[in-house]
Image (cartoon, rainbow, N blue to C red; front, side, top):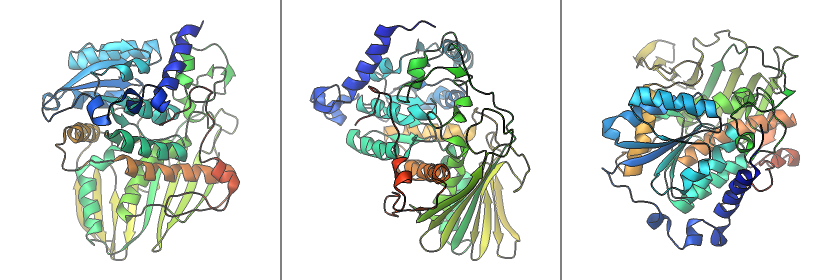
Amino acid sequence: MEKDNSKNRSRRDFIKKSTLGAAGLTIGGMGFSAKSYARIVGANDRLGVALIGLGRRYSAYLPPIGMKENNIDLMYLCDVMDSQLERASQRVKKQLGLKPKLEKDQMKLFANPDVDAVFIATPDHWHTPAAILALQQGKHVYVEKPISHNPYEGEMLIEAQKKYGKVVQMGNQQRSSRESQEVIKAIHDGAIGKPYLAVAFYTNARGRTPNQEIQPSPKGLDWEMWQGPAIHREYTFNTWDYNWHWYGWNFGTAETGNNATHELDIARWALQVEYPDEVYVEADKKHFLDDGWEMYDTMEATFKYGDDKIIKWDGKSRNGYNTYGGGRGTIIYGTEGSVFVNRSLYKLFDRKGKLVKQSQAGTQESGTALGGGGDLSTMHVTNFFDTIRGKAVKQSSPVDEGVKSTLMCHLANIAYRTDSKLRLNNVNGHIMNNDDAMRLWRRDYEKGWEPKI
């Protein structure tokens, strides 16, 4: 596909200007405070919203956007692929009776003062850079998991949220599950004594991944914008449509970033731990050894914390054996009992293994199917809207919590990539014993696309 070089230059120029502090378009540079720059949203004001990334996840946002009581104006649909824009437009019209503006360039949404909040459902490498650009232009941000592509970006996002004073919520929707909230409170109140071990797991039977072949990018895809802050390269089949997860570390964060984020977050929440002291993994590619999948597809990770608390991750991407009685979930062991919890239910057992209490919600998003939505996403998005308006009793997933849980995934990946056991500073999670590992704390960026606060 022939590139429009003037458009490509304008996009890079926008990013540069948006991140140059007093010399550019940031709030400080325009002479406005964060509070005065954005349109002030009252409890009953209509929120202008834009969706960025129209692949497998955006449809989960449509039910809460369509709820009358949420009072939302869906202003834009944005994607760098024409076909996804067209499909999403048809779906939104059919499902909600709306016709938002279609846009391939997210920078135009950020520059529109009538957009109050954005949803970022792009590939991983765009999550934090897009979130920071949105925050700089006065937007609230709902960003899908993982909240960052690397640990450095997580630190940047916390700093940006504090600087610009907007709401940032990660898409770890189990945090809004009433069942999960109930059983986590019970654990914290001593229902299983002292919790000392959590085993988080994910089991799937993913098949063969295409081997990469250089070819022209698909018709209608803005490949340069899709790559954005990642190091740019020639297009390979079928990178843009989900397989970027497995094609090296330029775009994705492997299965741990892709899925462990959810269950590790629940484990950390249950054990009330912050940063680990040690991380080590056993991980390798075990299936379809000649296919295009470039990193591990099987991982066992151990995170050791103070007070003799341990979190383990058992991730099997391509072996569907049902080890724990479900495709995904978390088991928490305590001195006086245990808990099994997933997105739709929990079971609380005493020390002898007798079932004491259980609760099941019948949620639609408890399994391992790709994308979609359900009542948890609806509650999580509604909590985001209510937090913006000051109506929420508590934000379900504030940015610093999302960053800490995502860091666990990054540390597991770094331990795998360096084949090393990591010793960490348990105040900030930084790696203390391996310079090569600490060099993976951040990534290289395409020149002109570097995120800055």
